[in-house]
Image (cartoon, rainbow, N blue to C red; front, side):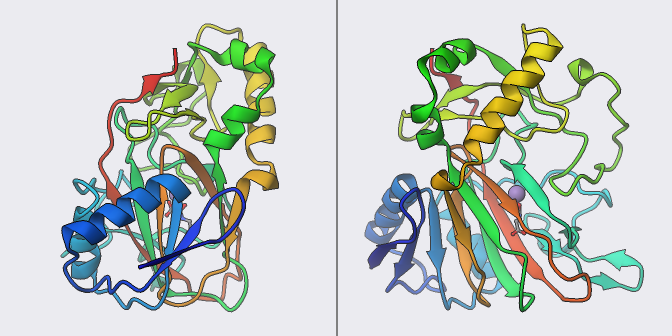
Length: 284
Ligand code: OGA
Ligand code: MN
C-alpha cells in the first residue's frame, strides 16, 4: 500500500490496494491510520459495486444511514444505507440529492447528536468540467486562531440547524426557520476533541441558521462570520478534480467540505456511505 500526499493541508492518495476484495486486518489498520493522519483519502480506479462499497465502509465502523432527504424516502430501494448525490432526473423525479448547484461549506449531518465520523463518496458519472469538491483541515484552522478568538469560543456551543441540506434545499417535513435561536438540530461544542485522535478541531457544521449559544445574536453572527472566513482559507484546503470511479473517504469531524456547481445539462452521479460517529466532547 502506498500513501502519497495530495496537498500541504490535507489529503492523500492511496494506491496498491484492491478495495473490491475483503481487506485483511493489517490493511484496515493502515487505512484507518492514514485516514486519521491525512483526513481525506483518495482511491483511484476501483470499480466498486454498491455491495462492495458497503462492505468496505464496514471496515471503518458501523454504517450510518443517510439523513432525511427532500423526498422523504431512500433514493435506492435495495440499498437504503446508501445516499445518492446526483442532479440526474428520471422524468420529473430526481434520483439523488444536491442537484447541480454549489454546495456551500459544511460538515455532513451535524444536526444529529452523533454526526458521522466519516463519509465515502464514489464517482459513478462525472461532468467534463465543474463539480469539484474541496475539503478544509479544521485541526489547522483551530490551531491558527488567535488567542483571543480561542478564548471567545472556549466552552461555547452552536446550534446545527437541520432544516436545509448543503444545497440549500429544505428537508422533507421541515418548515422555515424565522428565529435562528429556535432552529431545530443538535448543539455541539465549537471546538471538539476528535474522538479518535484526541486533537482539538474547529467544528462549525454549516453557516446557515447557525448561532452560538449564550451570546447575543449580533455577537454570534459576527464571530461565526469571522470563523467561517478563517476556516475557508485556501491554505487549509485540498480540491478534488474528479475522475470516474474516484472514491473519497473523509474525516467528517476534522474537516469541512464544499462542492462547485456544474452544467445543469451534464450528468453527475455519486454513491455515498457514512460511518456512525459519537457524541462530541468539548476541548475544555
Ligand atoms: C456530500 C457532499 C459533495 C459532492 O455528499 O456530502 O457534500 O462532491 N457532496 O457532491
Ligand atoms: Mn456533504
